[in-house]
Image: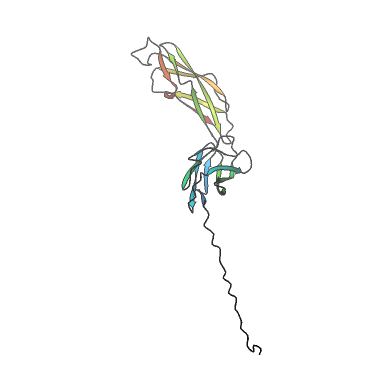
Length: 224
């Protein structure tokens, strides 16, 4: 006799979800995100790296600067190539040739086969118009009745083009005379300041050479 009934077999498939282990990595943050400085100034940014899932490789920080003209420079790093979590400080330097404007500094962290970036902006403002007067050398010697010569240089900033005029000099010494080789100083140029010792530099040691320090002399001028 034949089989009037049939048996059915169910096939059971078991599915497996492959769960991968978290990969070591690091995150990166720049602080502050923007700064404003004056041309010729120096500032710094902090680059923080934080380990993720046990990341333990050194991270090297490099940079690029975007913007028009003469850019500020990242002159140095402290604590570079550190293992996260760590903070690296980048020193940003400008000088009188740096162009006024906004620059974007992109910091790139590379290590352990991973790369991340963060960015900060630095706004460089032009120097205000003005000038300073410097006196060199640091000192000169004179005795009673003799003179000491110094160079007075006009250092102009911003849009000020000079010249500097109405020159005058003073110090805490008494019985000392001051004369200039010219009545005006062009920007970046120098004139000679002659200091005459008539008997009080200091008064108890007039017969031996006495040093007159440039820092004790105050020179003033006017600029239009």
